[in-house]
Image (cartoon, rainbow, N blue to C red; front, top):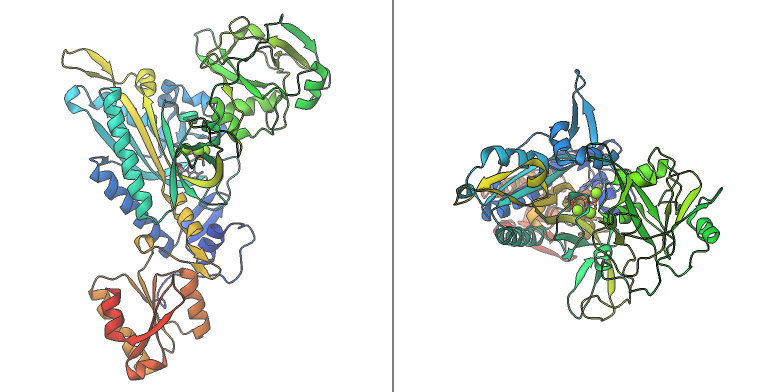
Amino acid sequence: MKLSNMHLKTLREVPNEAEIASHILLLRTGMIRKLVSGVYGFMPLGWRSVRKIEEIVRQEMDAKGAQEIHMSAVQPAELWMESGRWFKYGPELWRLKDRNGREFCLGPTHEEIFTDIVRSDVNSYRQLPLNLYQIQTKYRDEARPRFGLMRSREFVMKDAYSFDRTFKDLDKSYDDMYDAYEKVFTRCGLNFRPVEADTGAIGGSNSHEFTALSEVGESEIAYCEKCNMAATTEKAACVDAPASNEKELPLEEVHTPGTKTIEEVADFLKLDKTQTLKALLFVTYDDDGKEKGYVAAFIRGDRELNRTKLVNALNIPEHAIEFADEAKMAAVTGCVGGFTGPVGLHDCKIVVDSEIPGLRNLCAGACKADYHMKNVNYGRDYNADIVADIKLLKVGDPCPVCGAPVKHARGIEVGQVFKLGTKYSESMGAYYKDENQKDQLIVMGCYGIGVTRTLAAIVEQHHDENGIIWPMSVAPYHVIITLVNPEDEVQSKVADDMYQKLLKAGIEVLLDDRKERPGVKFKDADLLGIPIRITVGRGAASGQIEYKRRSETEKEEISAAEAIARAI
Ligand code: ATP
Ligand code: MG
Ligand code: MG
Ligand code: MG
């Protein structure tokens, strides 16, 4: 491609809205283009790199026997109602109606769609295992889209879904995907770490996140150098809470007028200052036993709450916290209780996933404005099915596996793998017939890679003050030939000759033949980060060109023939 023909607009200035290197550089190189907050388009160079990442993903998925399909981003609400997620997913789900009022969403993920395909197409155990995937546009109406492609509202994701006969077979599918992910991110040139993770709103049992290490990443991971434990801080903290000798006290309703913050309520209720923050989740049910809504309540903690962490730790939809906000018991502001909705205490159920020792005499909102319940106890006052201890593992805390002090690192979540088990096959009725013609639930896994976020993560890890330094595997082009003076016949001829030869050899090459000052061309070549730079200038007369790798500082004067041989 000749730059004089290419649709390319680079920026000298740092765009106002961009704070981190990848966002700044992707905008400055003109690779991406913002449409509205969290929605980006890709210009020729940007799209080429996206397609390179997609191709790496595709090859590694295909190598594991996964089969590519392509489903629509538009999904009917009915399927989401079947799985129960239509009401659980909350405001991140981008909902829409057609002209007849029928409800849809733009898929943030595709579990329902893939489960639906398999429940209708798969009958026999002979058709399993099966792994279907797609590389497709996803929509999430993120509360705070930021950092360009890193957290956008429209993004490209590879999502795969595995279908197995047994949990043991699922282990194999999961390990295959884990292996494929290691290969993908290695080929993309990322310095990454797989870490144990919570299953969040997707549900299921086991999960790993693939985290590209970076100071600007939004994921915090705890790791141990001694035993190799590595997990998100939330996950790492899911060790047993210390047992308590406290006795259950009688349930008490307390009027707490005007209290808003966690501190105020804690003081009012004279709660023990050393108590760790616990979060309770109330689920309300309608007459048919369907989940109707969520309310979260908290007792005082020793650290600031963060909405995402809470949602992850509790395995609840973001919606739950939103609901709590409305009810003036916002986790985000540290508010403790006082739900004002129409739900009575006895319509609520606290869902707790295991009886954690030491959780006694909690404080919760009393489902009434400015009232709290003191001494709430599982089992006695509520049916307890899920509760999470969200005390996070801090730097220096003992590793839950070996006891050595843990360290922290930050990173960008570029992919995640989940063992879903039978969560979706159960709610949506996906069965296969076994050897004895008996119906069995299909066992599922799901596996996501943020393709466009991976692009940003690569830039985050591969740049300097002058621009991007693309790893060869994902570079939009391999070689850039800078023709210093297009008016000079010899230079033009040498450059064009090299360009043609490289093209013939199948090298992806750019020829900067623009009528720009040499300084502008050099700056752009550095900014764009094409791995090999060939400069054709005065030396051309004596058959010499300048050869330089973007990742190195040294330049070499070599012959055009030699440069071609090296680039090939
Ligand atoms: P996060 O914790 O960053 O919100 P997630 O855990 O919600 O991500 P998953 O549901 O695991 O995301 O989706 C699979 C992959 O899709 C993620 O690992 C990430 O790489 C990518 N992804 C998720 N949300 C976004 C987004 N808003 N913008 C770009 N990529 C995203
Ligand atoms: Mg998310
Ligand atoms: Mg996540
Ligand atoms: Mg995730």
